[in-house]
Amino acid sequence: MKVFLQYASIYILILMTSSLIYPEYMEIFFLINIFISIIIFIKYRLFINKNDMTFIFILSTILIFLFWYTNGGISIQSIINTITTIFFTSLYFKFNREDFINKYINIISVIAIISIIGYISDITNTLNIIIDKLPSLINSNPILGNPKGGLIYVFRNINKINQNCGFCYEPGKYQFFINLAIYFILFCRNTVKMRKFKFTILLITLATTMSTTGLLMGVVIVILSIFKKNIFISKRYILVMFMIVCCICLIFFYERINLTLFQKLNFDFRTFTFEYGSGNTRINDIKLDLEIFSMNIWGNGWVYYKDYWSAKQYGNYLYTTGSSSNSLTSMFAVYGIVFSIYINYKYIHSFFRKSNDMLMVSILIFMYLYQNLSQSFSLMPMMIIFILSNNELLYGRENN
Image (cartoon, rainbow, N blue to C red; front, side, top):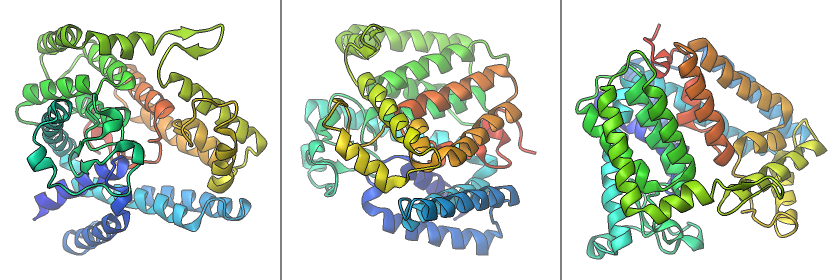
């Protein structure tokens, strides 16, 4: 039963971080979390660490102040969601601490294989007899069409039908889980079986996302792993598989790769815009977030923030999507300077204090900043694990 609960708790943390199904069944997931937490506490006598309790207490104090300061602009429900998310993450991580990395890699590897099958099904429009029987995600965005499933893979997501989005809304979110698993395999102590096979599957899956953020992050992680002294897969194998996957992508997906890695990254410094893609959205997100932040550096709250976005998104900000994709700047705009500096300090301090060397520090800072410049992950479970106590394994070290 313990092994089942461990896998289930990690899988729930993954879905809570970013998935299409979690927002639709949030109440059900919350009850499941309560149920699992009670079992962990009663049967296994585990509770969150004192340092994590202190972290939660400080965040709660700041958030309650912001609730008062913004006249409810940060709602009680929002505060409860943030605090309970951190609580469940801390408890589940402690419950899985000794084997967290192995189980995470195993889960993501299985999801990756299924997502490849689902991706092929989507682009070839096959397996309809099976997929039609899956439940629909009824509350999802209309631009997604009629997506099916969602627990492991979202089938028929017409918004990104040519890219592997896994269980997420878009490939830019899914790639984070793949890259995190690659990071764990290459840099962290693990006893995962069939390590080379799983590394290869993850590389192939990452390529099918065709995410600019994901591909660049993956390239950085793989290349920097070559410079690490102690690594958990042969460096020759890493390079060979990396080159093979790159060649296959260039042969079969040249046009898409050209669009993803070259046109999207072609930046015009005269107009301060990208030639194509979501880069312009990211720039405008930052501009609007900083504009809101400058109006009140102590925090504006979600209500004012969303109202301001609604008023501006059809004006000068032509590429906006209704909310910011950048959690670094949106955090400052919504929660203010105190909360935001505290959270970012916790991350950067942990990276420097717990990493083995500057190579690890560089990778983690790059992953944190680059991921959060394009997606909102700062307060999500699979990012929060890096600032919890007794998490040295995530930094390539033994736990104290």
